[in-house]
Length: 92
Image (cartoon, rainbow, N blue to C red):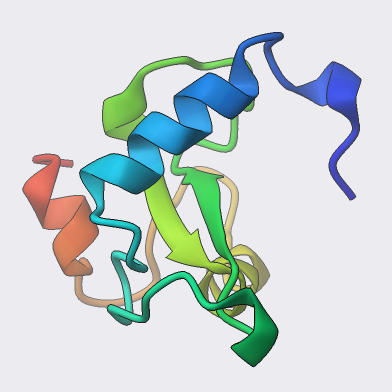
């Protein structure tokens, strides 16, 4: 669960920029932000550090994909198999 103290004070502004950069679509599955249908757009910190403000290390993911990526996280490993496009775009 997100606690306000876990994020920088300007988190809302940052998250909106990341979502706008992604065209308000999930960078993993391409679903547009449609909260009533279960596709609420969120921002995932690729390195897991919520205080890291490097937007290149943030990706817009629908809630479903975000939860899916967090469930396969292995500390020190950013992906389990072939790099997804949103990782390749950032040169990671």
